[in-house]
Image (cartoon, rainbow, N blue to C red; front, side, top):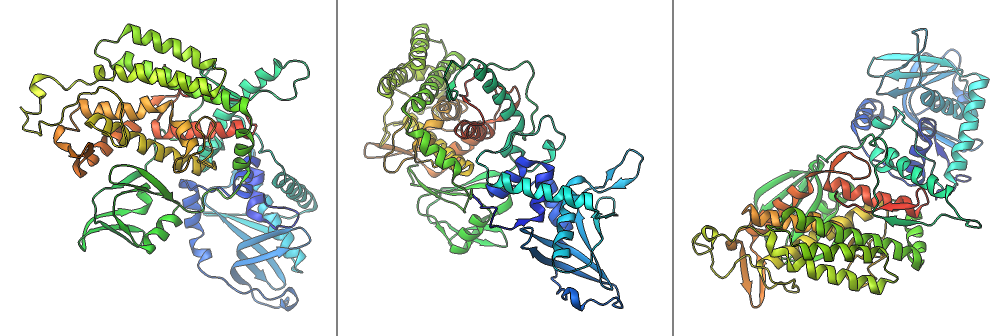
Length: 593
């Protein structure tokens, strides 16, 4: 936490506090910043004024007879008020100075039709004036320049405005030292334009907080804190939540799986070379991950550029074993991880989360059989239903492991019924492919997988674990401490926890889709001893099937809007963070209807 008593508050943060205290907390306390159209346009507006830094003479050297002048990018601070500001432009006329701040939008229209500065902009400019006055300059007015309408709004800094701004500075400093994040704005028109709406999740958090308020009404006598739990109820509210986050990202993962490739970077463009010949060029602002399989070399310059853009680099063996991730600094606070470590030591909390995750996984496995099996097995469906109910009431983590294992046995015994390519006309011999491989599945095996379907399942689970490891780190979790899976060298238990309900929905579904649509064929496999692995062409085809599944739009059962699976993974991870930090008390496990 930034200790506001000693740290100088930037004037821009006072603007954010007046606009939305929650936005101020995310940016100033947690150090989170995300670009959107508005922030990029704002950066472009400041390009000219930020291109040059001028010197500012001391106040005593400014004479009344001096000619008017403009000075750009002036940084000043005030120890008295504990604030600092970078002035876009300072107009001097004799001994009188006037700060000018550049904004991308348009001015506020008053009821009488006149234009005026927005409250947040007035506060930011008043902070600049306070700093100028504290440094001895004579300053009576401030100006906001709105680039969209190319208008200047001038206003006087009077005593009332100074008093209001000092109160806002004190309130912002108290919030910076607080341990709880402010609640989101309610049905505000500001939220759709906010760059952090995907992090804040205002509508989703408010919906879950309503659940919390109901639970608090049902607290028993002497209960001091509502239980933090998870369930599968996912009962939608009377109205769908307003969707403020995009349904899918524009950025796509980059997969490189050919041994011997060499990755460099020039002007924020990744250059993939094979024997000194450029085979692919990718702009950094078009990718969200870089996935490297096997012996692929990456230059230090490329790693620095990728980390600067906060793009994670994931490393795999040629067989798909997930080794680890290189990433930038990421979230610059420890608060969520501190809560994660604290709650991981509470057995009752861990058991509640684990029950719901396992029950959700079993329910989704049952749904997969109902939807995709050529003749849904009634006995297996009944067994899975019973095991789901047993998981919801399991009395220990050990019993939960047994229930999960039995459910997996029943599910995989019927997996073959969802594979629909073994017709006579599709036989490997007829297609001219290697007749050693067929898509026959008998049981789950791994390390190494001994048949094509197990090879695909292992690769799919490895990629999904990688995705959730990256997402949990992005949100601020430590992926190596979970609530169901226990710490073990070389694996990320929290990512494994979070992926349980998504194994059948994403990984298994991607495998079935790749096989049933013939994106993956028998000639895409090779055998080495007892192990079966994918060829480079086979991995490329499977990555395409996996990303198609991740990009599939699905309706969130609690919020009612449609987003793709990659977005769902992030939303679920952030909802778990809300539970740990006390904003909500219930974690809704994702299950399909």
